Length: 354
Image 1 (cartoon, rainbow, N blue to C red):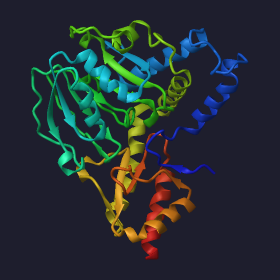
Image 2: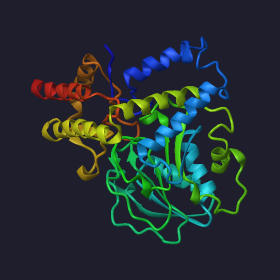
Image 3: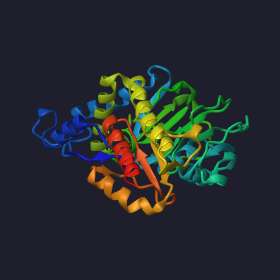
Image 4: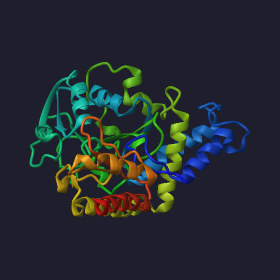
C-alpha cells in the first residue's frame, strides 16, 4: 500500500497521473517510442505543450484576457531574477513573508531600489503582515501567496495601482481567487502540479517592454512568448506530467471543487492540532496555510514515540523544515482526505497512550 505522502515537495501526484506518465515513458501516443526519446519539435509533443498552456489559462479563468502561459526551467529561484530583469525599472515593492520572499528580494536588489513594505521576520515569519502601504510609483508589487517553511498563507490580496506579481509555487490551483488581479504569476511545478524541472509562468503581456536595459534572450519573457515556450528544449517529462495533472483537476471539477476538498483536509488537521493537548500550532490561526500545516509537540520527550507511530502507520514526509523544526504536513491537491485522517488517528492514539 502506498504511504501517506505529506512531503512538502516534490509533491504527491494523483495515482492515475503516475500511471499514465509511466506508460508514456515506455510508449507515448502509441507510437512505440518513449516520451523521453521523441523530439520536442514533433507534433505529438507540441500538442502536449499547447494543451498544457491552454489548461493553465482555462483553470485560472484567464483565457482570452491578454495573458500568456509559459513553461520554463530554473524553478521559482530563476523567476526571482527574471521578474526583476523584465519589470524593475527604478523601484519595486516587496512583501517579506518568508524564506522565498527573502530570496526574491535579494535578487531584485541587483536591478534597482527595493522597498520592503512589511515583513514578518520579527516573529519567525509566523504571521502575514496587514495594513501595509504599496508605493504608487513602484514598478510592481511582489508577494508570496503561500509559505512552505513557516506554514502561512495570504488570504486577502491587496488592490494595487501597480502590477501585482505573485509567487504561487506551493498553492497554485488549490483555491479560487480573482486571478485577473495578478499581472504575473509563477509557480515551480514540484509543489502542487508535477515533478521538478519546469515552472509555470502566467503573464499579462501588456506589462512587458517597460524597462530600458538589455535583457538576455533566455531571461526575456518576450523571447519565450514568441517561441511558445520552445526557445530552447523544454523539460519534456515535467511538462507532460503537469499537463496530465491539470487535466485530472479539470475532470474533477476544477479549482472550485478542489478548494472544498482542501478546506476539509485543513479543517480536519487544524481542529485536531487545536484540540489535542500534546500539540500546538506554530503560526497565527488567521494566517494558517491550507497547503502546509506546521505544528509542534508540547513535550519533545514524546518525539521518538510519535515518529515511530507515524512510520508504522505509513505516514511519510511530516518533518518540519530544517530551519524551523517540529512537524509540517503538506496537504497538496492530490493528497486524499483519508491520509489526513490517518495522521489525526495517530495524534489521537499518542494522546491516549500517555
